[in-house]
Image 1 (cartoon, helix red, strand yellow):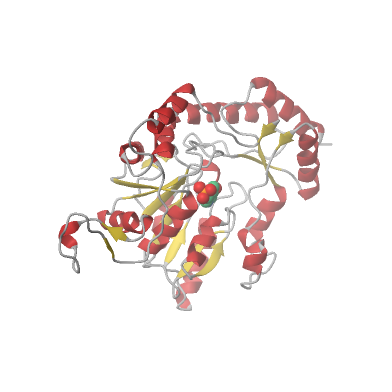
Image 2 (cartoon, helix red, strand yellow):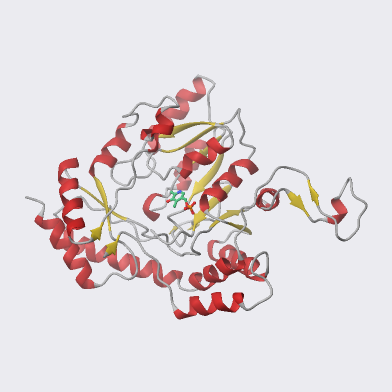
Length: 380
Ligand SMILES: *Cc1c(COP(=O)(O)O)cnc(C)c1O
């Protein structure tokens, strides 16, 4: 069986987890702090706050930016539901921006027009959540040039994109955003089983996210207002959650992070092999992607019928491609909020034509040959 994504676990990873199991702390111990420091170093952001998953991290990022019932949040229609759910968890209204059918990433021209219209109507969003789809970085400098005339906060959903970079730096350095979020689900670039992370340049946002990650409880004794200063005391000052990552997971994460360059390098090799094998067979990802983390390898077909035939044929051979994504507004939950079934043309076209071929670090040359032969055989 070949899945579209899977983890790569080494004996070093297993040893790192076993070491924690034999140690004093299974959670809230030194492995979490070490993992956070390693992420900060990798992406060049002073603050990293790891969480139980990326959905929790997105929720905390929204809360830290003050998203509430009176807020408006926009995200990409071509994403996993979490990118929008995080706003709804805070009670905010949600809207979606359209994507470029060549990349599946935000269409900046359309975003510019949508913002202009919203501005004229007095309905500008408070927060935008661009998604680095497939690991290909959104051009955040260009994004920022469009968004910065307005007072809008930005959360980057980089669930696909740890290890990705642009000419100006690493995804996650928050040069053009308030917070960046990563996911460590097993299909993503590195894994902790379940896990996620917020990175930020703001000490204030980091402290807020840290507090909300653990019940809204502070242990910072000098700041206590209502307590007498005894050493056992703690104080809850706001309503938080238990969104912590365990030390078991963090140790796995740190161990995985040591291999991130190899992981991304191997993914790039797979992408190059696909490109060589499938050139002229279907529409391939644009090849200007030397900085992508290559979470997904998405090809596009002429139409939905052709895509379905390829998907089914692969499946007959126990090869499980995937479609990323059903536009979020099509989900019954979002339809009930009033979105029409074919709300955004770019997202519709992308959804009708795209297919994510298997992309992970354990694919062999034979696997790629077999997949490509099947894709080609359905092209008539
Ligand atoms: C995987 C993913 C998430 C959610 O990640 P979890 O860690 O599973 O909560 C959010 N956004 C995008 C774009 C994703 O791909």
